[in-house]
Length: 156
Image (cartoon, rainbow, N blue to C red; front, side):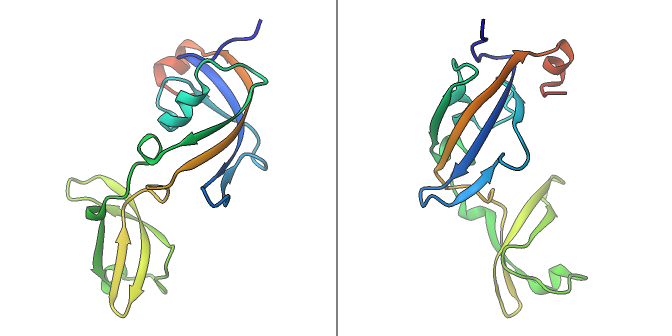
């Protein structure tokens, strides 16, 4: 008997992720299946919702709007900083990512959006914020999670 995907089960999936232009953004083709603990916020909500109730062998397409994926783009997370802020970096280029500390001491990843003279525009939004995500998924495994996996809220 095949398990139906619900909370506290370990689910193994293969997928190809594209945007609405059919550009491949991510895939498990080379890395092999991805395992996650269902119901523990290990994957984006929209994909988890799409997998709920499915079983091994199911193949499906799941479309995830930004609000159920990586969120909308917030302009307040973009700012212009002086090139001198990147002391020790030989060349600052569009697309590069850096760790930055927020005012409350949290670490965040910022992406370089533009470099114009000494002005660098950085963006702390997730790189996939504002993007509609299209998953082509196959469920390749479902098993009971161990007590330790449930307690730690991730697959071991």
